[in-house]
Amino acid sequence: PIPGPAAQRQIKKRKSLTYAENLEVVKQIDGRKLKRAVALTYGINESTIRGIYKKKDHNVKHMELAQTKALAQACRSPHQLLMKTEQLLKRYVQKHGRRNMAVETRDLMDTAKQLYQKLARKWKVANPPAFNASK
Image 1 (cartoon, rainbow, N blue to C red):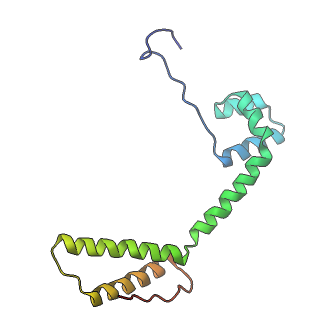
Image 2 (tube, rainbow, N blue to C red):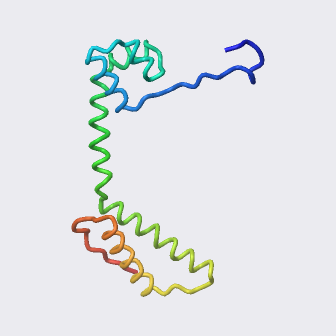
Image 3 (tube, helix red, strand yellow):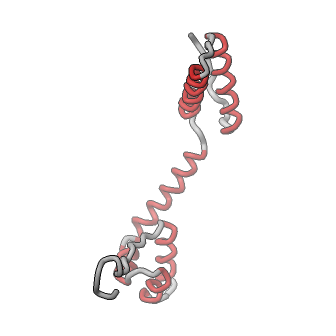
């Protein structure tokens, strides 16, 4: 960087690696690649590479955790299904309110059941709990 006004200086942005990239770094070092070469590949300091290698157990643990959480989020829970149905129902009522249209209780209950069933099919929830739209 050239000394001078801040506008002319290049600001070095901090680079962070994902857990997958951290594991790849560890594999490369275990595969007898030099830390300096790995650092040049990823464009980060050699000391950062040493820190990543030092925390390899931590990174492996968190990578496994992230994968199991992703699987858990892929399977939608019935609680999320009810919350999303409630949000969509609120939008339905608000839309009718903006149009100055009356919303009858029976129509609201039928709409709630339809929304619940559509979401359950869309999200592929196996055996969703029975939905009872009450007054």
